[in-house]
Amino acid sequence: MDSQGPYLNLNAVASPVGVARVWQIVFSCVTVSLVAHQAGFSAAYGTFCMFVWCLCLTTTACVVALEFTRLHTCLRLSWDNFTITFAMLATLMCVTASVVYPVYFLQAQCPHEGCEVRNYRIAVTVFSCLASVAYLAEVIVARAKPGHVSGYMATASGLLKIVQAFVACIIFGALINESQYRRHAATQYCVAVYSFCFAVTVIVVLLTVSGKTPLLRCPFDRFVVVYTFVAVLMYVSVAVIWPVFCFDKKYGSPERPYNCPRGKCPWESQLVVTIFTYINLILYIADLAYSQRIRFITQP
Image 1 (cartoon, rainbow, N blue to C red):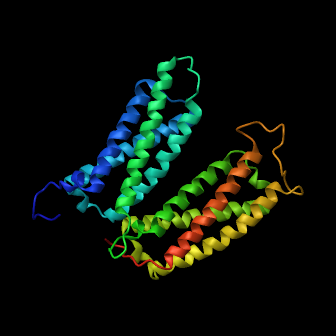
Image 2: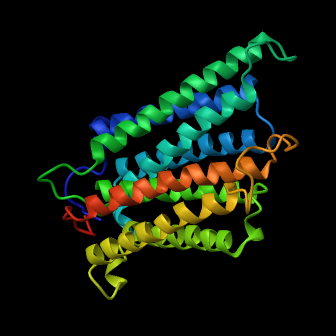
């Protein structure tokens, strides 16, 4: 660690990124406090939301503390790549929690616990949205600018990798929820494509964050472009195969069955997978377009 200069780094809380992180801590802390005090949570959806807010709060607090004390220089990872990766992931997770929590816990009428609980849940939703905005502000401030040297995860291609992995997690969640993908070999192929692309994307992110990209036996930027091109081709095939074997009359049902239980309906899960398949296809195409133009370094 550098022994020159002051031991404490005031830019950790005074710079634009530092200010954004302070607000992230404030909004996440208020959200967790409101849920724990009166708003409450239950079941898997509530547990997921609480996990997101607690994870964002603790991780951001650790990031600020490490930068403030300059101890982050002792870690064997690419710090700038790590922080913007987490900020992008936290943005997506907080946005998801901001949608899931009111859908399952906020109602127009007062619950049996009383109207005070409803008001607390409204406040939870508002502060969760504010936390999402604070994390997005960090991403906007820290992302790569033209003419500036930056790590790969700060580029549009790197940020898209995080979104691709997050969308893949949504697809996996829908697959687990009674999607009946094992009925056909073609839909099993689709699941294999989702798994392969997700795994490689996560490996790319982990190699970049850990600063281990030199372990690859080929130039990292070339590997990223080739993989993204392969992923686009594979997702194109899935975008054709999955809807056919799920919604064609010969293999599935073009309309939602009337006797399908809401929340555990295979048709609904298949529709969710279809929608997010096309979303990820668009993301991979955009990623391929950006990958052709960027120039980046792997060790900031």
